[in-house]
Length: 395
Image 1 (tube, rainbow, N blue to C red):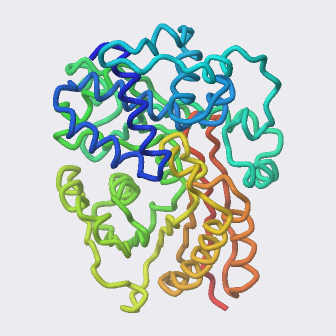
Image 2: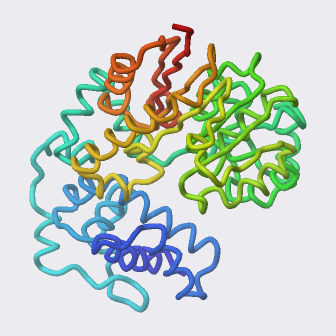
Image 3: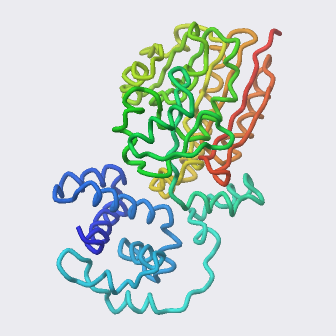
């Protein structure tokens, strides 16, 4: 595909997304329907589409007209190209600009409102300002950019230096990441990682450095049993297992069994022993020294990875999530043994899902104390996370 054809394909995909189709599914369906597109073409279209979704409002503003064509025109302008050189109407290229679109391009620009400039929905900007304060601009600017590809070195099998050397054999270059001692950030050939010898042998896993830093905060040294209650794909389960003593029992549970379907294979590759639970452990009455609650959340801290979700998320969704988080906190506290720890984690930037939940839990449940809480910010290079560690004490 020519560069102009890639832009035309991106317009087709974005049009479907703007009409309500999920971004990832739309891209997958496009690739299956266009077998002529090689791997580099598919990667290029994906990058354009996700760049446009991350910066949807500001790109449309800069283009002067809306819709998928406005988004792609804004992307072309940001790349320092002339829109007319791409929208040529030639074979496989986008149709030439209409008179209305051309007029939009040529009109003078006023300074956009902050929500447009920072690419967030109007309704959520006040909540983000409240949560981030002086860090609002830097954090939202970070979410407008592509996320790096971070790897976690499986220290059960090797160390960072040897993992880096193993990746270099597949021409994958990495650098270390401050604040996450077992993390590597890929700087060259990220798309080769999944086929690399290091990945296939379980030496490394793909995991954001912030997510790794969250696990590093957990008190794993003296525990004998751990439950990852909202385990999802099991990334944090495997990260904990890599750091803990081999005798520690790890259970993983998620209400969506489909999300855990690959955990068994991933654990085998990593050399970790993890039991996936089919029944809600709250009903079983087990207790654990450490319960990790990686709660369902808005995902505002990871918007650069899921920009489509940013534009679909509503204030009603936030209210529902806050209620769900409070219920899960209330339910899972019964799973923690005396003197055990409950770790509440979100990938949200919002106080409603973080500090406010922390305060409400302590106010409504006796016998708990807060050990520590911490935020990880996108402006520091990782996804945005919040962690609160509660200790269960004897009354």
